[in-house]
Amino acid sequence: MTQDTRTQDTRNTADMTVVVTGASGRTGGRVARAAQAAGLGVRAASRAAGFDWADSTTWADTLRGADAAYLVHPADVGAPGTAEAVGELARQAVRLGVRRLVLLSARGEDQALPTEEALRASGADWTVVRSAWFAQNFSEGPLVAELRERGELVFPAGEVPEPFVDLRDVADVVVAALTDGERYAGRVLSVTGPRLLTFGGAVAEIAAATGRGLTYRAVAPRDYGEALLGFGVPPEEAGFLTEVFATLLDGRNAHVEAGVREILGREPRDFTDFVREEAAAGTWKAE
Ligand SMILES: NC(=O)c1ccc[n+]([C@@H]2O[C@H](COP(=O)([O-])OP(=O)(O)OC[C@H]3O[C@@H](n4cnc5c(N)ncnc54)[C@H](OP(=O)(O)O)[C@@H]3O)[C@@H](O)[C@H]2O)c1
Image (tube, rainbow, N blue to C red; front, side, top):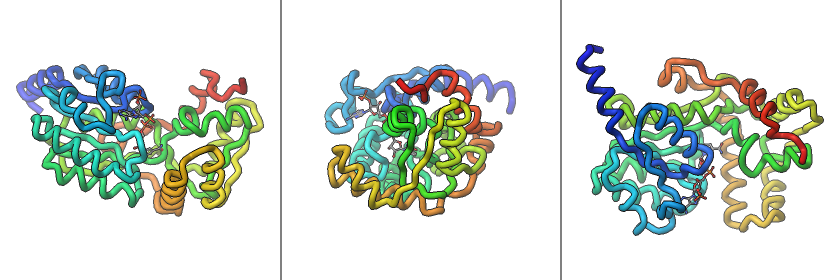
């Protein structure tokens, strides 16, 4: 890279404004912080700021004048209706000149393919980031209370290993994709952690780090679906989630991929480091 090119790259990045959907959430929050650390201007597309995924008339004000956007749908990326919403948002963005769009998708999720296709069909300079199961599913979100309060994680994952990925790595990959369209437009990037671990193995690491007798109990997907109904999850959503978990956890994702290393030029963060940090922060302390 010549000196001139480097100056050009730096100026372009400093001038960029990126729209970050879900900026108060797990991935969006980290994408916003990583983008700010990279010197980008960040515009949060949040309900608090008037942006609502459920109302397409609220999107243009957030998109207008931006250079790129990170798209994370709050429902599952493969949930009914997500493809239509992402497609429509992407078409609006392209019409407003926001061509560089990066979508969070899920690795191995067949149900997410129509959402990815809707993004591609919009005419955007698209990138799809297919993430492995988040390490932070064990520290933030619906599974945590169960582990913290009941000391047991009940989940339909059997003994299938998964390369849990740290969301800070996902965020860094998203920012790389947002800022380097020349390299990443038109590509699907698969990001995983550095090694395979079963859900039982993950809970055992958390138990060891916290000194608590935490356990994992595998259940059949069908039984898990019934448990979800018992927690008040609407039947359609429970049915969809059960189907997605069965798809994702049938062994298809039980391999590590080199995305983080290739894109960021460093190793992905290890699950053990994530557990050590969260245990020190008291994440799994019973209340
Ligand atoms: N869990 C995994 O292991 C995994 C793996 C791969 C991919 N994924 C994908 O990750 C996505 C979820 O991402 P996440 O974990 O970052 O989400 P999250 O932490 O649940 O956050 C959801 C965000 O969306 C916002 N939001 C909710 N409803 C909204 C609406 N109607 N309009 C605008 N914003 C709204 C929320 O903000 P406010 O409530 O403040 O408005 C929040 O910031 C899903 O699409 C899933 O398929 C998950």
